[in-house]
Image (tube, rainbow, N blue to C red; front, side):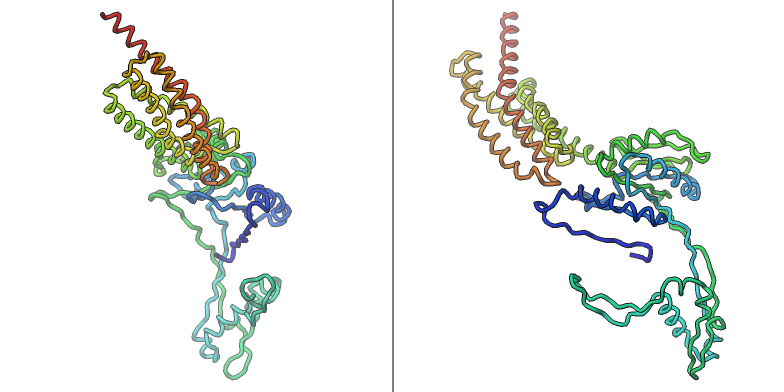
Length: 432
């Protein structure tokens, strides 16, 4: 993308023929340690192609404040805290290093009087510094031809005096020294100014090799909240479900972004969707049973899914992510259906003259096989997604949540109904 940026993209062989991509990335990072020690002025990063929405990095500190020059100073101090976090890599900031730019100005009048075209001077300097492409060649393993560039070694083109000592041939064939036609001016390149939502901001970023960004953000938040750096008191924020707004006009503050902010936003939205789904299920059941208590008994199977969801994620080493939450929401409808069938069968048996205890036992026995077959269909169908990097959490939630809820629903829901009906009978007898 520029003379100071380079990128090497590595495409891996199929998953069955190699270790996990993260293990390869960790091995490459450690193998590049000699390169980092040799070129200490460079920033060497290892990136894995993310499966989800793009963010600047896993851990992002957005620094706001009144003075942008002070923000650049604070970025260096905050970056030092980033490097103290265990397994933190790719530490960087948005403050570019000071760069000196050399501008070559051609005296057009002198050049024309000397019989030299100004464009010729530009071409001469370009070929001297950047080199000249003289042809192409085919290299085994390369998809495209490789340019052959004729270029001087860096030591022979690194000084102003070397450029000024160049000579250019005019129309009459005479060699004219470049120093008589041009002047070289030096200036410092302006550093970029970043802004977000019309607030000037400096970013400090980092990634984690083997742990969750949550722990890194919590540690950094503990270290930096209320701390005074270079005479400036910093405050931190943006760790709630509602995004915080910067107060950069009057305060110096850090707002956390990256994966942490993205995770909070996703779980906030999915949590709200889950609550809405529960509310609609409850209202439909109230309309169906004409009761406010019976829907609560039927929906008692929903919390039972969590008995399997979280241990299942722990057992398989799968993080609880957004797709896992989607699986929990989907399970709400499945397990309520099983409870609904059990309660309806109990009510039907009681209408036929069965006692409460007989109706509960008979309904559980009759509905056991259909409920079990439904659960097995969900679990086996979801098993195909367990190894998927994106939908693996969804599969784990469906498999273990269905298993736990099915086993417990057959016992807990009839028992809750039995206890509630006994309570109603005792209350009725007491009133009479």
